[in-house]
Image (cartoon, rainbow, N blue to C red; front, top):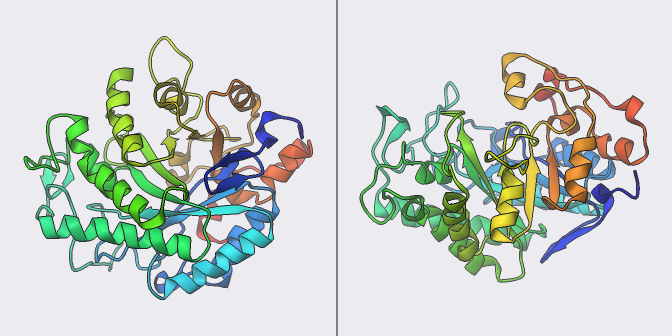
Length: 363
C-alpha cells in the first residue's frame, strides 16, 4: 500500500500534498460565536498527524449578515483569523497542508433562534416554488463578491496553502448556477448555465486578483442540491464543458466534484464519475468525493444511520488510471482520525466504522 498511487505526492501551485488524500469539508458548527479555538485546532491537527495530505476545512463564512445558518459556524474574517492562524501552524507542524472552504449559505433554512438581518439570494427563492425574501441588489452582489475576495486574501495572509470556494449543494454560489432558484433577467441570470455562471466567475476573478497567480483556488461544485437530490446542471458532456469551462477560464485551478457516491458514473456509456469527466473535458486537476471507505452514503447520517467499513480497491484503481487527482474522505476520517495511516500501513482490521454520534463532537 505505501507504493499505491494514493500515496504519491500531488503538487499544483501553492498546494504540495504528500499524498492524494484530502479531508473533505464537513460542517461542524462548533466554533463558539464563530471563533475557532484550541478544540478546533486540535481536531484538524489530529487528521494531519494521522496522515491526511490536504485538509479542506469545514465551511467558513464571509463577512455578510446572512452568510451562515447557525451562530457557531466559523467566521473567516476579523477576530476569527487569529484562531485560524493557530490551526494552520498546528497542521503544518504535523506535516499536512490546509485550505479553508470559503462559504456563503445564501437562502437556506436557518437554525432555530438564528435570524440574520438580511438573507442573500439570487431571486428570493428558498425552494423552486417558494419565494421568501427579496432578490439581491447590485450593491448586495458587489459587496458579497468583495467579501469573498477579502476572505481569500486573509487565507493567504495567515499562511493557508490555497482556498476552496463552496459552489455546491444549493448554497449561494450554487443558487446562482441553478435555474430553479436563479430567475434573474439581468447580467446575473439567464436561460443558459453560461449566463448563470456570471456570479461565480466574478467571485473567482476577485479572489484571483486578491491572492495572485500562484495561490491555488479550488472550487467545489455539485450537480445535486440539498433542495433537490436529483437536480442536474449539466445533462451532457457539452453542457458540463460550458459550465465548468467558464469557471476555469475565470481562474479556478482545481475542480472539487462532489457526488454522494464516488463510484457512480456521471453519464451513460462510461464508468467515469463526475471528477473523471471534469478532468477529461477541462484538462485541469480534479478532486473526487463520496462515501469513501464506507458502505452507506452521507445523507443517511442525518437520518440517524451509521456506516460500516468498505473496501477501497475500486478507488485505488481509479487513482491509478489517473481518472482524477485526489480523493476527499469525509465521514471515515470523522470517526477515525488515523484512517490514512491505517490504510497506508495495511492495518485494515483496525479501521473504524462511522458512528453518527461523532457528528456531535470534535473527536
